Image (tube, rainbow, N blue to C red):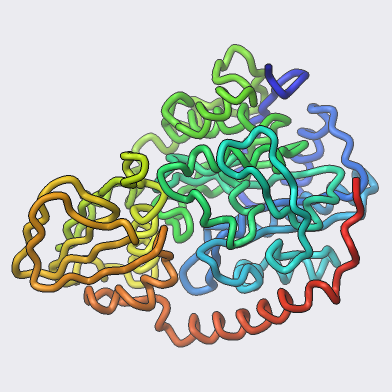
Length: 439
């Protein structure tokens, strides 16, 4: 049985630049067309997975988009109980990314609370429809939200092909739960989160989209905003724009099979002033790097292994971490991968031989190993399930002669400063927050 009743609609609007007044009008018109009535405690969930003023500028929802949404809620709907919440990526303090993206500056100016879900009191919730996450620690601002606005940043993704509405829900998890099942079960994990993270409306930032590693992407101009009342419908359109049939995106298929909607375009209504085909044509020649490690211009060799417990390629675990690690290093220091030392990287349990007698071989992951012959000048083992990008930045890159962003003085100072504050905020949760009200 399907869980959505009503007409599934996706509005595609042309928007060539980040002009706040123009975007506010587009949002207002879209909400009116969808018959939306924001009310009560309103939670806005953007994508603020990472940000850095020096080299990461397009991984997050543009602050202008958030400003336009707040303007619309206040001036057009008379709503002011607004909170913006997020749990950033890579296990690093979300507040660091809030500051680096400019979103903290915006919320300070507009006097809107900006919360890191990791720093809030949480309510343990049982998930009835989930396959993996039977329970979830739901942050206070999410648990108490009466109306949810999801504002993803449309990007290519190194593992899941696209990141938009459904994938945005990874950011409602605290850091501890975020890493659970982040392996060959990632697509199922994403859909589990839809039970808690089902938005009332989606406004997707597709003005400038990202290609490459989604947390350190390269910008691509698309010039659009997607507005929808149904997550799967919105992501069907997003996938088609990026060149994928919805059936090629595993987590969309998973969502359909669990009753969250349809993958048939005949079952959704699409309106607006620019077509899917026109937008797809704008980016038809875009190649998104790091989706295929074998295409990298580097002396490194890669062996993608399985999760031994399932027999599946562990695309969402250590393979994902390696792609993210190299993507971040290359974004910060262009050309550094080409200068790497010759080495082999084995991710998970590889079924075959790894013959590199004169080069080091890196075994990434607690389960990492080789079923056949393993010859190396040196074996480097990194344990974890998955091994985090942060840990590999600190302990692996320099051994491969790749410059690590972690040792940039500014990055180190930011991480230490924000980690201290975030640690203190987590320790003082019981003293800062009133008890969550039972609904």
